[in-house]
Image (cartoon, rainbow, N blue to C red; front, side, top):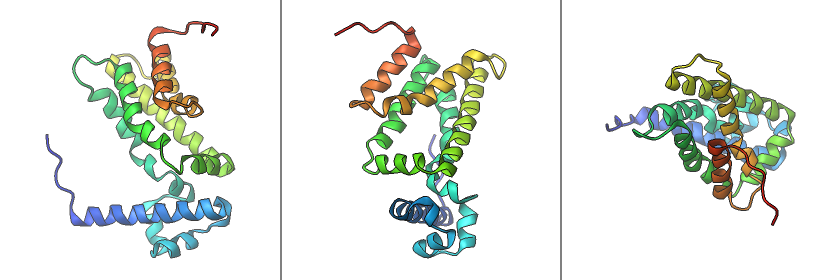
Length: 194
């Protein structure tokens, strides 16, 4: 199935949205989140403040501009997996494909420091995490034909969404992701002493 071509108008909207997000992040990293106003961002992106609010519901959303499609991606990872591939393996591949490039981004450390040092951004990130957990656990439950809120589905969703946090301090991110998913697939075993 081929994707329909994106209209010029949609491409322009996407470019404007990205320019706003890029300008905001540059300002936040340079001055700190609390020292940047929406007007500062509008000026840096060469748009009006009204244009910013057409693309983003609030200031926090400017930091997490890539989050817009995460719920849809999680649902697609579960529902559109290849025949014969289990849910857990599909989620493993999804995280390898989506999180490893983010982990390797040169501004990743600065971004994490910005979020960790700003209470409003930490709270926003926690709300996003809860929403993604609900979305993923519901998709898994639907796929397995069990009721929403099923403890096994909620637990799996929470652990899968924690994989980036658990693996970010490791030298080899891919190996860490693989090890965590192996634990999810086969259960925890005590590590052996070196």
